[in-house]
Length: 589
Image (cartoon, rainbow, N blue to C red; front, side, top):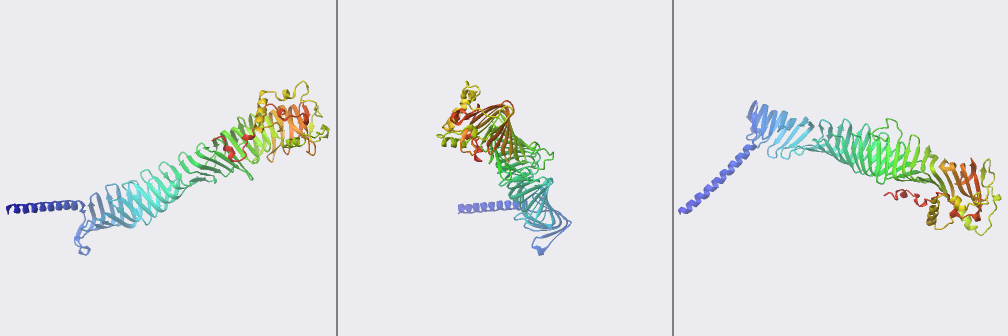
């Protein structure tokens, strides 16, 4: 019996000890959460509000953990809840202050609601004003849903719905979001805003308007403190002139007026009707330059046609996306390496190219080639003068050469290979104007009969290479070429077609001559002269004016071997000619 009594007593003691521990923990917890009355001018219990409810009047100050409340009057309840009225000011850890006309605080959920005509939530340099605010002390979240305005040192932000996490220092705004900065205004539907860095992250259609340009994107961010931004999803920038810049991604620093654009880059210049494309581009507004690379492409839009120009790198000068060109400087376009361009009536190739709007001259360097209709034009350097966006004059310098296939001569020679060839006197097609020569000689390829036909034409080793190349390309020796060669040339255009050529220095020509009705080929004419002027109609030589001491010979067609009738330095680049827009990218990727 004694042992049993001891066991019972021991169990009772354990129960009492556990009970007392629970009470002490509960008391400690309740004491920690108890709202303390710091000051009030007067106080009384109001049974109408429930047992233990106390009414406080005059300079009320209540404290709960790290939160302090000031008001004109308040009701305090036993469940650690209270209601405050008149000049309400709630502060927490000296990091955030709430101001309003009235305040309800739930001690169980620790949720505070503030009401008033003008409610203020102040955290450091940021101030929120609204008409109804909710603050969850546990989750550190302040939100409103009836419209609010946030002001910091740089921006004014308004929205219908707003959520601010004071611990994570991140704001969330929804519906009719407007961020106003002295330099621009942002309109969007959804925005995250980091007050510390003053960075706005937006989702959905977003419009940024400034005095210089307009920006659009459906995803991105804008650092309003350092004035740089990055956009994704259909971004573009439009300036006051209507010029636009777009791509898959745009990075732009407004302070430096510098941007980088990735993938499907497009710069549209409405003034000059040009479009610059590529997969990577850099824009420098301070220097007024634009660089494009990776499938870089320039489009010059004309009324009925468009010039497509490609190079490894395209560089534009005097280009501005923020405002019109204040200096009034003409644009300059440079293309570097593997340059090719295509237009229906003009194609070209070179290593480097420049186009200066100041003089409307396109300059081609390093092995330039131009194709105009049936004509192939080559020289060491070329300058193409434009007038009213049409070709006006082509200046060819060094080893100038114009060649074209005479397909009609080939057909006639093949069809009439067994027939007699008409005599020279039957031809009235060619007109030669000179003071010293009135009729062509056809007794030999050169005046000195001791000089062979091959020796006269092939004066350098490159001619032999040309013959071999011609043979490899065409597989036969029956192709006829009309040729003009000289040190320098100037070609003149009408409606983008060559009609006159002025050859200066060591001028030479070979061309095929027909009867009046173009039914037969008379022969091949070879002319040497210091300078000459050639007139062309429908891509055929119509007349020649020799300016100094010409040496002209017409060879009967039976004596003509097309493979030997090629001037020194002849090369045929037909395989390199771009026939489509896609062809200008071949060989450069």
